[in-house]
Image (tube, rainbow, N blue to C red):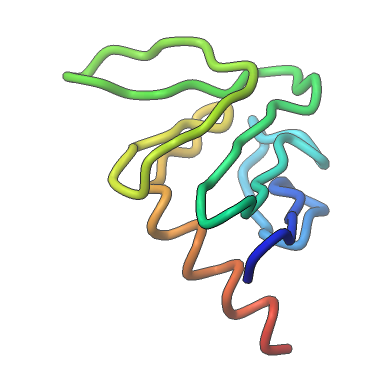
Length: 90
């Protein structure tokens, strides 16, 4: 999965079917065995959750154990990676 990227959102390769998630909300890129997340100008924002607090996130490297929010949709980075692997197989 090195050097691949996936759009996250209602109409992305990694689909999040939530009305607060934009059609093309964010992009998850696998670069040199690291994960890079970029908000694509979404309406309701991308956030990192730490200790129950949301922090707005525009772009940067993220860790596998990080919890993220796309609008009101909350998931783990592990879930996103698993879904990206499924997309790669199809």
